[in-house]
Length: 602
Figure: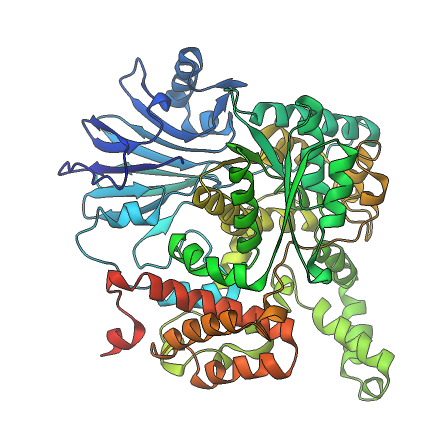
């Protein structure tokens, strides 16, 4: 799929190619790309190379007229030019004095980079970047701590020391051996009430319809859609079939009924007359692909829905698809995650006058009498959580917050990491948009952690593994910009998730779907692993790999599988999955001879 690797700076070194790419040499840059049709020079002698599906003012950047207009704007203001691009992209610009590297606003095209003396090395995959290095990098202990905290490694860090990945909407400038960073994309939450709700709802329907049209390939490729049975994939499937009748949809289900959403997907496919292909996956099939998935991934990744995502992408490829449209982004743009509604309840406390918090709430919290009643215990539990401010409160149920870092890690390991870093990173990103409501700040935080660092990485990597392209109409810039204009109280009237969105599509989506409770795209790993020997063996292999690194508490590693068998299978199953995937990733990449914590201490 889309691939690029380059080295900028001096002395000039030609890149080592990890695959068959087109090699391009410039005075300050050696580059290899899979999309040479998106490489061009400007009248100002600058050189541009993009990958992905970028459009400039609705025109594909493969067109010379669009390239000329874009380069003219870029020379005047790189930030403004980047903000006018639409679609998934990564960009490299180079002239005789500098190089610039940038990702799209959601980093849906990942870019890794490192600086080695007077050179900037960057690539769209970790393996391609590592091929450019003279020696293998060491594992970053902070990244492992952050992995257990977030279940993935958020940008800008990676699993390796000294190697980073671009944050969403970030631009790097490399000049005279110096690297500077700029956040070129920050949303403007205008909360526009000049238009009525009805007018904005109609605008959303039309804008998303046009976004689906824009995301269709220019060539006559076979295009289908992911279909989970949720609001977003159902909307995209419907709009695709409105534009291109009989476009197929692809769904994954399970024999474990709690996790199976195929009936909802079937309802949607029938409603929109979309030929639907479905597959129910089993525990043994999952065990068969875990090593393949782990070896493919650039970094450890703890989201278990990576498995059904891969099976769905593979199913589409087997049925002749070249491109899939995905519905990712709707919950994070239009307030669909349960935690947003829950935080509204806690924010009531934060809006109370300080005198009431101090003179009424604090005594209630300290009351020993109140602790004796069940209702009193609930009141005190509410106050305990409500006193914590956003965004820290969002992590109240985090494994590490609930049990403490010392429950998971050895003292030697904790002495080398900053246990406060994840919270500090959350706070920094949460504070960037200004002005913004608390709801919009939570959405913005999720644009990074839930989308850029997690779901988009998952979907993009699994589509690459299945050799199929993927596009995200929900993240079209026109849709994103429109979402920023919708007032917070319209997006989420008290407790009503996705209210504005549902009203916008109430006559389009099946009526039953609009009343469907929120359901995640999960994997019944915890339930399966209680009985399936192949999954138990994989879990043991992954956890045993970790046991020799002096990173995790030996007591934790020895007890976690036993607790899973004896107590709450799904709760402990999630922790086992996260640990297993880290261990299996380290095992799959051991040929790099990475320096572990134990070796570093020696």
